[in-house]
Image 1 (cartoon, rainbow, N blue to C red):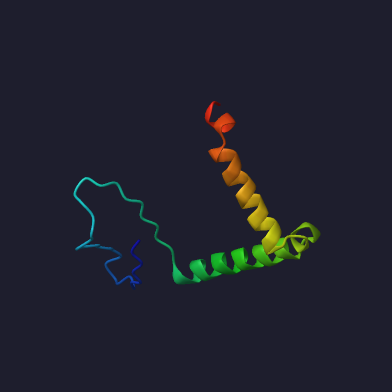
Image 2: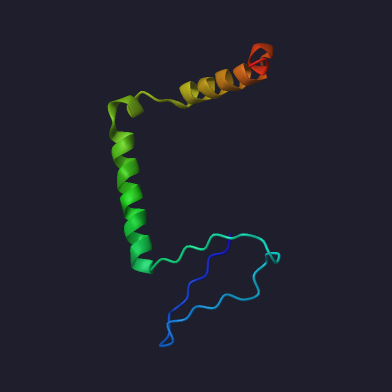
Length: 84
């Protein structure tokens, strides 16, 4: 991933050069104004605060999360899962 901050000049053109990718490699380019990025980050931050404030989230503990991960991993590695 490459993050570059640029200021658009009067030409309104954007040129990316010397990129560390191979010719023919497909890339996704997202262009966003700095203020839009900050607004999106703030929205996500507020969303996660609301999510963490929910009663069901209050019941989560590291032990419960680790137990869930272990149960999932055990299920994937079990012979019965491999037959599906």
